[in-house]
Image 1 (cartoon, rainbow, N blue to C red):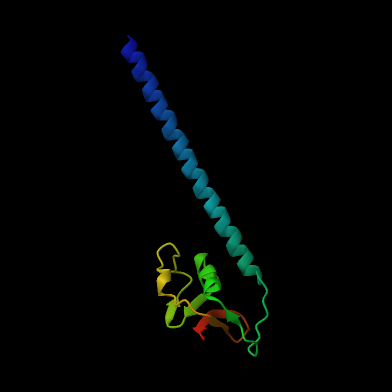
Image 2: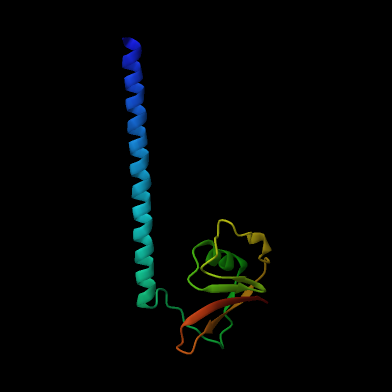
Length: 125
């Protein structure tokens, strides 16, 4: 009789653990969807971060700034010297950051006819 009671308790605990894990995964999925929708909505509204685009300025950035720009999701396509990174396919978790030379860079922007940024280009100095 005691073995049956223990079995029922263990099965109940396993069942509750599975329900909790499932609810956790569902909540994670819904929050990820919400963040994605918010990010897309904000990006469609226009400028997220305003920075003057001045082709006459030096636009010098350090190696650390380039790495920091690549760690998060990309808003635009990026080119670092000859390495071209498309925002749709770039995954910072899989990228080998050692291929980025430890030097200073000049940051320039490629824009379309409407003045929207299409690509950010980093060229080593």
